[in-house]
Image (tube, rainbow, N blue to C red; front, side):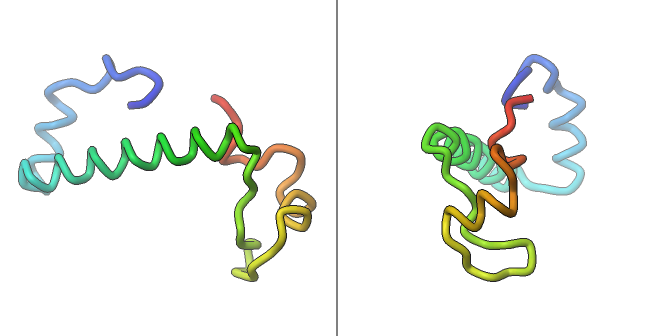
Length: 77
């Protein structure tokens, strides 16, 4: 969706309408847009996740050790 919006066509929205109202689809779209922007912004800061996979709150240094030099959330497809 973010990388190739032209791939999203009528069929996609028809399927969504089987499960959600138009208002819910707009809300989902806003949520997706917010999250794409949020993760893009934090990617520029080289911000690592605050939590380890086991749920512990960790420092940026420990997170870097856990997730490696580039966590998956910062990898550009």
